[in-house]
Length: 441
Ligand code: NAD
Image (cartoon, rainbow, N blue to C red; front, side, top):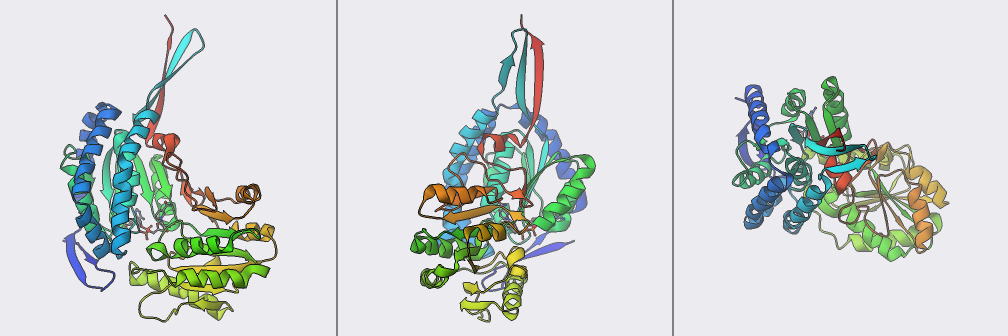
């Protein structure tokens, strides 16, 4: 019997040892999922959405227990843990209304023939998720998929299986049996699911895993939706409110201990303003409390990038990379060839790079092969928007975080994403488009 151990990242203590789902059981789950999908897919979108909204009453009732478990198993602070649960409870009703509206059939006629467009379920969906938002990421990937009429096989990250199990158990008190099932395991079980008879794979995680999934799903032309990593830049223009930009940078570089796909990782500021910006950034950083990093491997990766940059000439402006507990770190004097300037850090590190012109900032910000989010701070909004439109990221924020208003897509460009979710178009990505044309009477 294969087992999986889950640890408290803050203490290193073992929380629980769980049985890994066997290959045989994965096969059985896929069969059951396929069978139940016929009945689940035959319901209306509204019937399914109503059931899901009802199941979230259980999330509301258990929100503190869920938040406590997120704090215990994932390591984010208690405040951030509760916020994560509340954000997604708060969003479920609106998501249901959006999906119902987005999946309504529509008609077109040329006077002689009418064509109706349908958004049908795809079938069985495998949802493979990361650890950094252990409730948020499954919510985002699985709820629209279920509302669209797919059954979902959920594989939570091996770092946070208990949160995944508790979340699914609560929903399953209301959802019909086998509409939502759980597979426990590592990348090996993820691979098995990708190879199994599923019709859709929705994945949030690293770029490397995303590439692996796409390659394997390609053999059967399975539909794939990938939300991958980022290397988000922040460009501070000359006329920006430097204090506001620094306050944003501190919050967005260090929240969730920097383990956020749209964390600010590299900040471009004009040479003439570099020192003033750095002083402000340090001031705001001093007020920040970070939680723990998910595991030693992630911490080692972050510190390797930092020490690599320092030994290649970068300057340590804030924090102590040798401290026992991870701290926010600010670096300056970086060069574009350093690993920390190219690859995702996913930890509490802000890299401040001095540039001569905004054009140089754009050129450097567009270099990494990631293109998830980006932020521009500027006094003249039109000027800042012009710079924003030159960035290749899928989501750009001006004087704010990169995410859009309610109903906007969450979209990574380039190698940060493949497909997207959120918005009417995003909800439709969980479906198969079909048309039926018939003569008008
Ligand atoms: P990861 O890619 O290591 O693992 C994610 C999931 O994939 C886990 O459940 C894992 O078991 C599974 N997996 C691993 N190998 C697999 C394979 N070959 N086939 C199928 N499944 C496999 O990522 P992680 O470390 O859990 O999460 C951090 C990453 O997630 C970061 O890169 C971060 O930027 C990204 N992320 C992106 C978004 C977004 O919206 N774009 C949101 C959150 C996190």
